[in-house]
Length: 111
Length: 172
Image: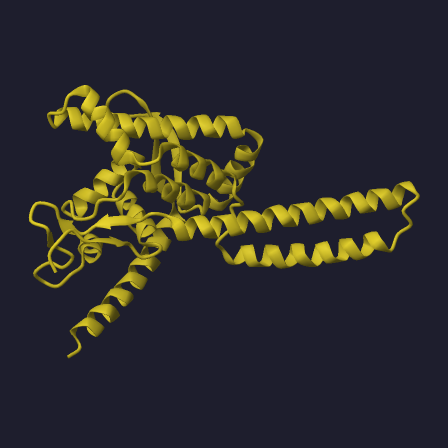
C-alpha cells in the first residue's frame, strides 16, 4: 500500500504517550509533543492542539500535575510532571498495550 | 494526594473560570510561539513561521474551550467513584423528590424541603450532563498520528524487528 496513511490512534494511546514522555522528566506542553516525536524517531506526530485536552484530562485524573515556571527562553510556561499514581498508571498502560499489540501481531501473522 | 490536588484545582476552576481561561490561553499561545520560533530557526520568514505555527496547532478556540471544560469537569469522572457518585445522587434525588411531594406546600419547612429537592435534582442533572459531555469529548478527540514516512510515502508502522512505533517508544 503506497500513499500517505493516517490512522487514528487507539483510545488512550495519546494518554500513554504523554505519560511516557513525562516519565523522562518535567516538560511544558510544547516539549511533550517534541519529546514524543523525538523518542519515536519523528514517526509519531501528535496533532498539536489535541495534546492539551489530553494533558488536562490526565491532570484532572491526578496522573500528572502542573505548575507555572520559567522556560529556557525566559518565558512563563506551564510545566507538567508525572505523579506517583501517574507512574503506576503508565505501568498498567504499558502492560495493556503490550498485551494488545502482541495479540494483534499474532493475529496478523497467522497463516 | 494527587486526587486531592485535582479536586482543589476543580473547585478553583469553578470559582475562577476567567482566571482558568486566561491561563489556558497563555499556555496555548506559548506553544504557538515556540513552534513559530522553531519554524524561523528552520529558515522560514517570521510571518510565514507564525502562520504555519497557527495552522499546525489547529483550531485554537476549540482547544481552549475544551481545556476550560475539562478543568471544570468533576475530578471523579472516569473512575469507579464516578459510578458510585451517580448511584448515590440518583438515590438521593429519588428520596428528595418523594420527600418533597409528601410535605405540605404552604409552610416554610415545606418550601425549604422543596428547594433542597430541586437543588439536589439540579446538581444531579449537571453532573450527568458533564459526564456525558466528557465521554463525547473523549470519543471525538483527535489523536491523529501520521505513521507514514512523508518523504517516501512508505508506511513505517513496523521496524525491522516488526515492532510498532509505540512499542519502540515503550522500549526506549
